[in-house]
Image 1 (cartoon, helix red, strand yellow):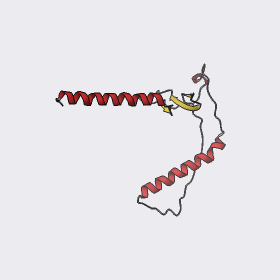
Image 2 (image 1 turned 90 degrees about the vertical axis):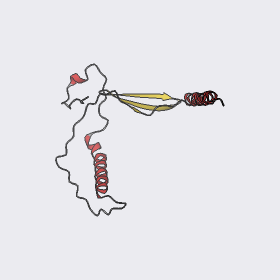
Image 3 (image 1 turned 30 degrees about the vertical axis):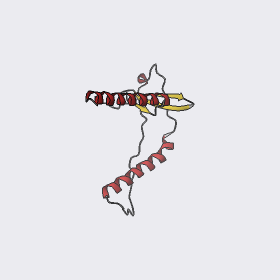
Image 4 (image 1 turned 135 degrees about the vertical axis):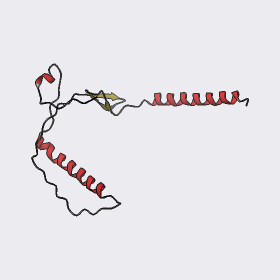
Length: 133
């Protein structure tokens, strides 16, 4: 499935839907973004050099024509409180892909392990009986 192309914002995209606005300005986001980009550039340089150790004495990173655009993303955010702990789930509105941590029920895990052990023991017993042992 080909993802849809980015298009300029239009209010009709969110008509009838609750939507969040941005939490930080572009100026507030620039410094952390610049740091992440420089860290990735550093990792790429070191990976391209290869070997166990590299000595990078200098890098010349230049930023030209820096711009920003806001992006309207069709996602659903869900926070579930399970046993007093929050679990946040994000659902991609285009692909339906779900990301996030899931709460784990200790009772269900224990039950699944017990069922697996019973099945394995049953198979072993039936196999031994079929061989005459």
